Image 1: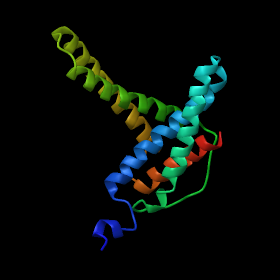
Image 2: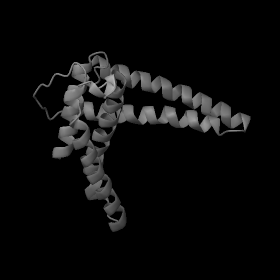
Image 3: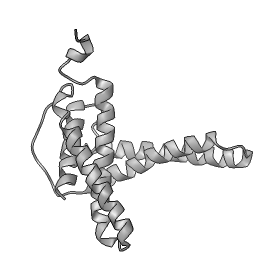
Amino acid sequence: MLAESERKKHLAWHETMEMHELTAFQANHLMAFKMMLDDVKDAKLRGLYEEAIFAMENNLKELLGYYPMAPAFVRHKGDGADLTGFYAGHLLGFCKTSVRSYAIGITETSTPSLRQTLKKQLNAAIDLHAKVFHYMLDRGYYPSYDLPKLLENDMKNANKALSM
């Protein structure tokens, strides 16, 4: 007999949010990698970029298949050419990664002065993340309090990245 959770026809909120983070992260980097590809002259490195692009395209196609299972899913149509949201999302992804990287770096640090420097830089990274997040929230690029709109934005950005 199937467990109750296996009979659910929708995703749980926490896994929906993880799916959102992975989709947003990969869609943003897919766009950036596609924009950079023509500038990569080394054949081996270009091949690695192409492999990463192919993998992210497949990942996004698979993840998008789960969006109809998200709680409160609503799909809307529409697409614009304005890349402000992409640029803001790219910056936000960098900020998130910076905060995580500094936190990990601090746990590996035994030199007191370096630890203090990393803590100072971590706090600055946290502050910048907050500024970028609120910039995006205020302009509707990251509607974190509106799950259906957040998922709609993910789908729009992932489809834009796939179509590039």
